[in-house]
Length: 239
Ligand code: ADP
Ligand code: ADP
Image (cartoon, rainbow, N blue to C red; front, side, top):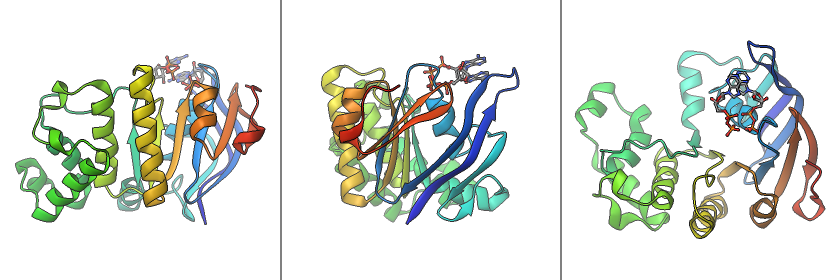
């Protein structure tokens, strides 16, 4: 089952920089794809174009058979709800509790008023707690987000994507600000949810060694072009 398809995708930034050049890709359900490449190669541009945090300038991106490039309004919101995003800097509300941060993944499922008032239905709270449990951090549910270590905060952001009921997770340099031990814990958690829940996962990493350890498939990019795409055992430092 094809989950993410790039059809001749290019991105030219307003200043003329070409972020992506004629990228064609097809990612299947349950894959753990790692995108590798040097800084400035286009990893972020590629990842962020999947959920349209970044608008492409040519071609089309298709998610589960529907064009997200052409999607508008409610359809675009529905498609985005299916895609959890994990950032280098966690993007948590620092002064809020861990549980509230995870519940924010449920925002799109309820009326705005209800979410502003924080009137979360019990099943949502249960879902958020079980998401925290899955990444082994349930005991921190009532701590303030900024009391947690970087690695713990990143696990909270994974739990938020799970509470969102995303079937696709995009992680843009998720371990770039973490130490080596914590890096492994966070990537282990991503691998765990990929394998247990079948969540299609696309991760940007600088490190080819880490890519080889976790990926089922490695995509190498250089200057906005795919220069390698294949199984891990064939991956060499072509980027
Ligand atoms: P990374 O290498 O980790 O992807 P960058 O330092 O390239 O991060 O980018 C950080 C931010 O600056 C991003 O929001 C990116 O869109 C923006 N940016 C990067 N390069 C340029 C550029 N040449 N002109 C304008 N904005 C840029
Ligand atoms: P990576 O994630 O691999 O570090 P990026 O996708 O951030 O690479 O950047 C790819 C290229 O696009 C780089 O040359 C970068 O400077 C450029 N770029 C990124 N964001 C912007 C932006 N907002 N405006 C102009 N150029 C940008």
